[in-house]
Image 1 (cartoon, rainbow, N blue to C red):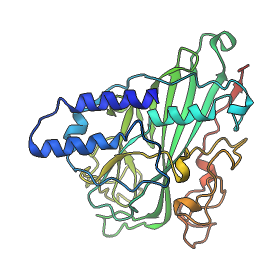
Image 2: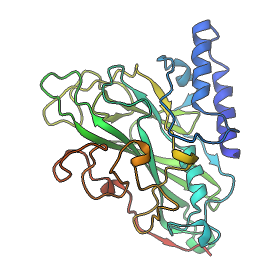
Image 3: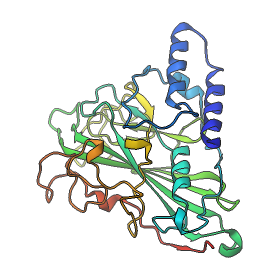
Length: 329
């Protein structure tokens, strides 16, 4: 795929400039592995989390403070309905390509206590915003898309360094949103915003691995999201009780994996249309039996719990519903 090869080439070229000590050399080799083999097919099952060096130095050298544009293999606009099972005007296969280009770079706390080797499983949605179509039909405005990455966990491990603030529960989902724009009718895109819970780039500073993958720090146990590790040991931005976050950024790290069983994109489609033949719904094959990507009940991580009161969010409620209208041919 042109896009994946381009990202990989940029990533490797940046890494090649890093220090060449024996330890750094091992770290560089491991970081290169995060980008995957651009010529290899996707894994048949969700890949286990890579065990990599905990030194983020080489990743920092391969990152930018401002996102770079990406060029897709073709325009994302659907040519006909056979390419668009969720009826949003975008070609489903190219939605996966675009989501992959901007998938987040996930950084874990060294004290993480609630993460399976393959977690987080990441399901995603690519939804247009406003007019969907070539510029002659939509005026001078760019094609705008909103991409949501939903990180899915079997367990919320609570505040791991706050003795009186455990707050653990079954099932956990967190979301990262990005917005991207195209001025050439859906072939080239650049990020215009990264929505990291209560923090939004460009208002807040962020880094981008290989120029396109936003760094997302996940706190130990709670999996709360930040753009850096400055919150470590301090009261959580998401707690009314001043519970302290564990966020040292010294745990494992990896690029979000967007393919699951059968090398299928973890695309959930749209609220208006998401046929299971084309999109992910049943989460059983991902290790969450009895769960659905479009379930309106509380998420329990595939465990027995009260779906009316469990603190896990209602999965169906997290997905995007931005208004759009389709002006494609």
